[in-house]
Length: 227
Image (cartoon, rainbow, N blue to C red; front, side, top):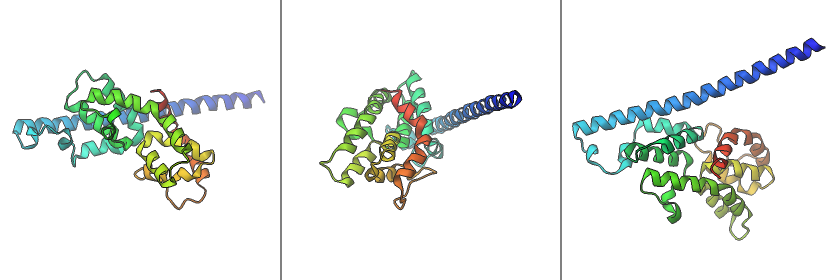
């Protein structure tokens, strides 16, 4: 019997160690992909400048990432990339084009546009990261407030929750798992481009939300770390 417990203990240690190695490898891979693609973006921008192309004369940062495959690959990493992009922007000593493109990538992944609201408008990357931290810290309370608001239609409720972006997903799923299935349309909108997208024809929405809560644990930790 002692041997059995010993073997189970060894298995648990090995299994835990393997999971840690997998997570560390995944983290390293995400960061490597981000770094590689940003290096490629920078190289292409430098080429444009050296050739004095029309793009090189543009003062609009969005022009530099339009139809840019390297930028799109960063965005395709999804929510897992948000903490890394956030950290890079926080650590950046500069407030130039590279930092601005990082801010655009964060907004693209999170499916938000902070410039739409007066309180979160930004003009520089440093201005963005300051407002982004405030925005993240407001998300849990915003989800609670919108979900509990009986003065608006279900359609408007889903629209407002969707506007909060993908960082709101873990908290929306918590509400649905607790029985508030009427806000499920927000999940459908916010997961449209994910590999495990929700659909309108899901019958047991509570069960779907419960099943997928763990998938958004890291995103929830990231949001709560900014409270």
